[in-house]
Length: 319
Ligand SMILES: Nc1ncnc2c1ncn2[C@@H]1O[C@H](COP(=O)(O)OP(=O)(O)OP(=O)(O)O)[C@@H](O)[C@H]1O
Ligand SMILES: [Mg+2]
Image 1 (cartoon, rainbow, N blue to C red):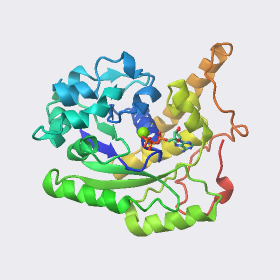
Image 2 (spheres, rainbow, N blue to C red):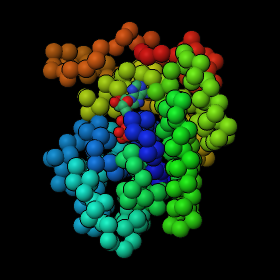
Image 3 (tube, rainbow, N blue to C red):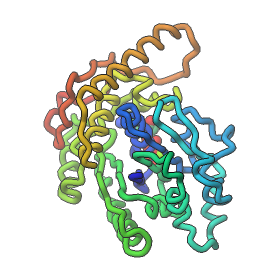
Image 4 (spheres, protein in one colour):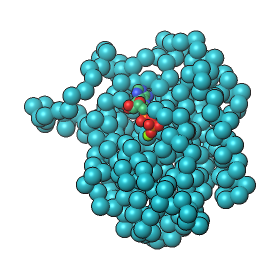
């Protein structure tokens, strides 16, 4: 199992959105994927339509009561995509574990003990916006770190701290952990600042800066209120296109080949399922959501990797 901690101690940078949609894209491409909600805000669980207050099996049971991981894994609406949910009780876990020896390695032990015959190809851990015991558990369990980041002036601030914590964990607890990839999220290609910040991130992270950029896209912001991934909510949006691109880049970075036939079939399946669902439920009750600013511009047929600079600004913007 390849384990990825999705982490950035800065809040609201796209960690949960990335965890849900990269996980869903990989599952739609035939991978077996597990998402772990390690954030007491439980945004990942809500995004996947698992209401935390109704869950009896959450990350708290794993971390505090030592329940085996296999008992807590639940399916999602996306075949091949599984989740262990969180609820607000996770917020008290740091205190409960404060005096427990080996508290940083509980999650790693749980993943190590997971039955071989049910193993996942990829596990993504959605971390809270802090660097406490929960994030330490993620870093101790992970093979790599995926850092979603906004292209704002202060974005690199805080990266020094995160890098330092990762190095400390690497030295003391988990020699395997590395920063695998830094993913710019909510990118507005129309501004010059975006290009400048991307240049700075590239200087700092080099090849680890993703070639894909996740553009600012209102459909990505709407999807959680429907309890749906972007591929269920708006499969023809720029948000879906960008996460397909990043899922492909992620697979390539992990030495996997992209079967273009499988990719095309997965994208077509997402579009046609959403279209038929929309047709059959036009009169159904829908949550209140922000109206898109303009109509969807349509999907790019064979999306090239997004430019890693401010060039291509004309292609920027929301759906
Ligand atoms: N590319 C995007 N375009 C527009 N909105 C986005 C995009 N990505 C995420 N959002 C929205 O921005 C908000 C923050 O995103 P998200 O919850 O993924 O961040 P986070 O890093 O997990 O936050 P937290 O630190 O609180 O856990 C959410 O409302 C989400 O729907
Ligand atoms: Mg989050």
